[in-house]
Image (cartoon, rainbow, N blue to C red; front, side, top):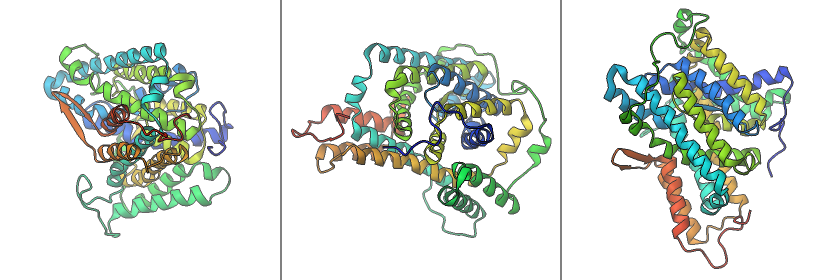
Length: 433
């Protein structure tokens, strides 16, 4: 059983706690949310706006029962860059049109799930597959966290840095130590906001070492519409752009299934049954379509924020909703957005080393509590293949369509579960569950 929640899904904390709990979620999602538009050429302010608005739409569609925060999806970076290369200066409108169509794919799958139920999902995704995929989600992000922490000497983490004299290493380790210390040893409300304390302490330490550049903050305006400046155009539907972006929705749907299972495990509820996978799929997809209308990149549920839920045991949807409102406000206050962008990557690296690890640990817990017997070759093979493909970052191309990482691992686990013969005496104690 999960530990008792400090604030359950339908509970609202007192205002003096509500605000810092929500700000903590904003800090957790901010870096990744603005990184995607920076890498693709879209507007970071519009990414914040579409992230907050998409999260509120998701909460509405799921009837306020799923505490998920939605931010910019990394899965669409490559296709967005491909559209930019194909269309030149006119690429943004075509890309936004393609992003809008992704939501239609989600809606179609949601309709199928609504008509057929989720029984087939439970059959093709038994605990051995679900647990292994959750581990992949956490450990698949581990390289990103280590890279942000400055613990990689080369791109891709091919060589681990060992010099404690490196400034980035010092910042990330200091942030990590403060976050862990607050989470473990603090009492009262402080123990619920370790991420907030970690980021604040890491930021102050980085500033003392001269690792923070405040120039963007001084130059940014206090107020301004997020549609001002480059990074937005009226959406238009072009078949070539759609053909580059739309197929990636198949991959992100597989990621969505994994994310819903992670949330269910962390919170201790079966969200794929109540409010239902059809609602979570529809909410996720329409949030991406809304992002296309507003000028932001497609959205997806964020592992960083799931990690915050796990470490704090605060599952309140109201907390997530207020975080979404704060993100929307930030999109209209460039100076505050610029201030958050000054947070050095090593600070966030120290934070996500904890958050991503918690996700992986939730997957291990799923395998243990489901009673998976790895003495059975079938279980051993399924888990081994899923972990290797997912953590190794394997990818496979079919023409212009690519499937990689967690989605590839989930698909492999699904197929192996269907084709491998089952043990006569049952290989999973948790199958009935």
